[in-house]
Image 1: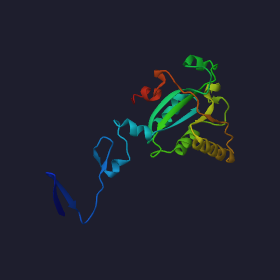
Image 2: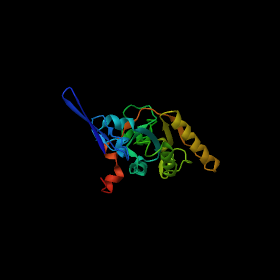
Image 3: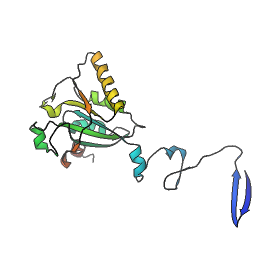
Image 4: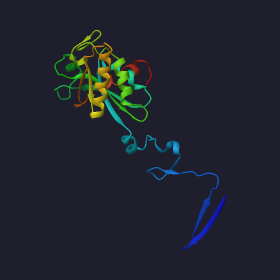
Length: 203
């Protein structure tokens, strides 16, 4: 290793020459050095970076308790939230949803890192997590709130939703899943969040 020392205006500057290899230092937005392996990753305290690395999917596939658990632990899923979407009632309650008078479906909102898990991979889980061939019903649960529905956030999500649905239909699976633009999402009550995980003592 060779070095070159220059003195400029009383400040000593040292340049190092490494003949055998080179190494690039990355600096995060807080001025800290990070390795190449960490350069494309967000850390919990870096809210701006995390926001840029997050996309959202919203699916309805029956009772949201079990549906949420299908997605909650997938690698790349950052957060899951159960709630209501697709209806007319503002700030609906669970009791109103159960009465099937709001037009809303029980849904799961999934925040995910698209560099770790793709929307297509989430769709694959969605189709396998429920029976998309039954209208307004999943097993013993009957009502519009249990309908199979995909709320897409952009054209790419819309295209993938239709492509995967069409692929099922070509295989003879007569999916009746609605594919519609995203609408206002209302959080379900706190006791519904991570319901199965809490019941199993996982949280």
